[in-house]
Length: 66
Image (cartoon, rainbow, N blue to C red; front, side, top):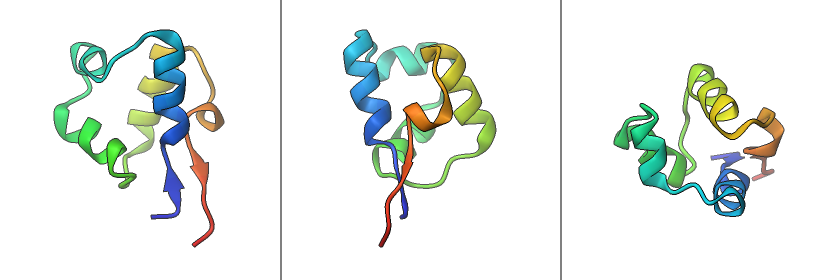
């Protein structure tokens, strides 16, 4: 997949937020798993993550050329 969410998990670590915290914030385990595997997620999920982490989309994801 050309989108990587490594930056998301780096930012979460920096802010002391765990995957469990995402689930407590209403992001389903299935979506968390999709993020871990760099699979597609919808823009509403990206918006929720940005709100939770107080960041911009480019802070949590990046395009990676194949």
